[in-house]
Image 1: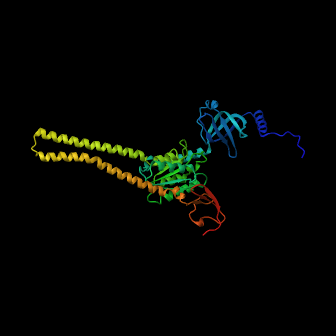
Image 2: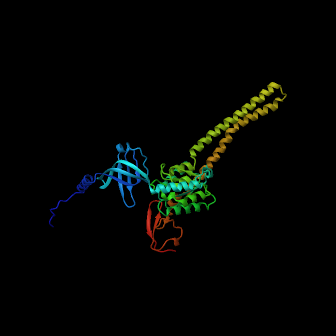
Image 3: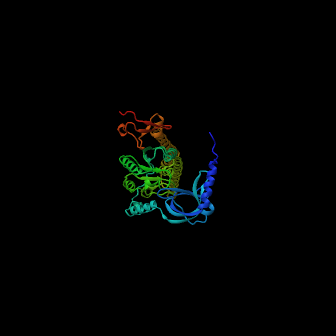
Length: 400
């Protein structure tokens, strides 16, 4: 085979040529679009995507330029970016090195968000006076989230570490996309059919405004508002706010924070109980001592003719009360510790992850819905099977 006499370029050479063409022929430009996927690392540089209805371009705003801006950038804002178009060699993708950013106004999603927020606020859905109290010692918690996300792992780990005397029920749902709001609404209604659920947590990890948009659904807001069970909203990161956060009875900045808010720390409880025991003992002892002193003073002051034998018996009873007080309190607290241990063992048995460890599995259909009956799937349909370790994708061959 005869070799071509044409020059053969390396990938790096092509990238360099295209970069030079862009910088020399286009150079500095103004580009209008909506901010998404905003990232602000500790370096002080700022990175985000600038998008319109059809396409996206990456933008890098380096620390020296960011320091000149008097703007608070957020996902969903419409801006005009002034900068140099170039190629980021490592990924061979074109981007804008921003020198200046001007606000055009907030994007369409934020406009929708603010309109719905105002509408629901006027109807009283956010009123603090109507919000329900979160129980301090819940016995059964319902969690609505994705069964495969990091949020559920974080919540279960923190709750089991802090306070194990309870049951946890999980309703697996989609937490992103068009079908997510309806699944979350159904899960809320399903939990409200239970008589013993003390509190519900709705959780999702962080993401862009597009990723979290399911939690800005108006119907979901009313479902949270109408729930008879108190609801904690734990959606996104601390800087993220959704309509669900405003209407919920309590907003947690993250799923992990929700786990810390919903249950007390058992170690702190035991520490406080021990302190309380000491305080009670000291207080009772002080009261008895004062009463004894008053009694002796009265006898000495008025010369009451109390037989010496009766007085001695009362003093002896006081001494016995003081000696036995600490033993009684210790016995009560030992009983409480035994109950805590027993309830902990019950929770470990009910833990869904422990059930999977015994050989059970969870089956989802091709849309991610939990499969409870064979007639909910079709022959030939792919299903996902979650095991204690790992997942399996299988095809339905037969149904019974």
